[in-house]
Amino acid sequence: MNPLSYTQISMYQACPLQYKLQYVDGLKPKDKWYFSFGSTLHLCAEYFFKVRVPPPPSLNELLDFYESNWLSEGYESVEEEAKYRAYGREILAKFWQIHSADFRMPLAVEQIFYIDIEGVKLRGYIDRVDKLNSGGLSIVDYKTNQGLFTREDLEENLQLTLYQLAVEQIWQLPVGRLTLYHLRSNTPCSCQPRNELQLEAARRLVLEVAESIAQERFPAIENQYCPCDFPEHCPYYRQQYIAAKPELAQQGILPGLAATEAVEDYVSLQAQIKELKSQLEEVKQIIIDFCQTEGLNRVFGREHAVTYKLVEKAGFNEDEVRALLESSGLWNRVLSFDSAKLEQLITNDEVAQDIREKLKALKRVIATSPRLWPRRLVEEE
Ligand code: SF4
Image (cartoon, rainbow, N blue to C red; front, side, top):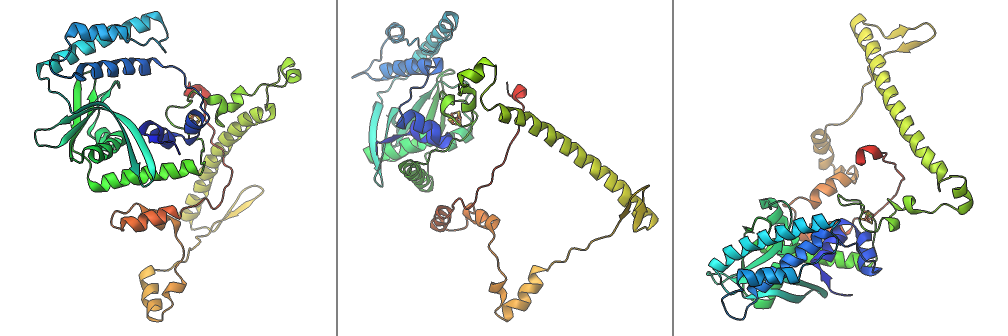
């Protein structure tokens, strides 16, 4: 199996099918301006810090480098590109001002790594590694995201966790700080390093993803970024790309016409059922209220009568039953399998980690049943 990268792992987590289309089938994603913008700024940050000896490049040298490495792919118009080009210059001018004032040689810049996690190869590039005064190491990853990072973003960021694993393996020194550097505002957002439990959870995750890929588990999982660049290969969107047979197309008939019309009927019937259910509840309550107020067990309409009765639901008190049956050794015979309780055990930190892992591994698809989720396309747009 080829080495995995953080990008591949996170794409597999978001949608295994998208991962397959891009990394197994080799489909090419579309160019996007934010990737071009981010790549250019990353290159410039690398150029600034990757000097053999101080000082770092001057502001003019940095901006010249920026201009000659500008990537134009993915911008929707000349105006949009010009706007971001100017914005990038502003960001870099500020970056230069901050970092040339207190320039320190980093330990590594754009450090490529390959590490082994129980036979699974993990690879990546770390934007910057610095040596802290404490003797530990600091990992910095540049980001061109719109918004600043919250504490939660930092603490849950898998990329930083994987980079910590790599850095500690390469340099055999502890990591003392993790940073996502928000380039747009030139703000370093830092947090404490991961503890051993968190590192171990990340290792498990890498192994789980590698195992799922090896077993060719590639279901489509819809997520907030759908549709991706390959909707014509996705079961959620593919219908829109199925070409009608020429003879049907000539008559203006779409493929899957019967199902297309059934969708509207289905949604309309669902709405009617909902309305009827609500009306049913209302009239039911009127009858119940009347019976209770008047002490009646039957109400007569013009052609029908409805009988009212309080139906008792019998059950057992668990403590009482347990007290009786445990003493006679019969308690185990009435215990039943409860999936909901098992799910609770899997997420309960008080249960030993290895037991939780084993329970999780036992989870299988034991039955499937078709379900439909209607939604309004107009709202979606
Ligand atoms: S459009 Fe389909 S394949 Fe692409 S990410 Fe969404 S669910 Fe996955």
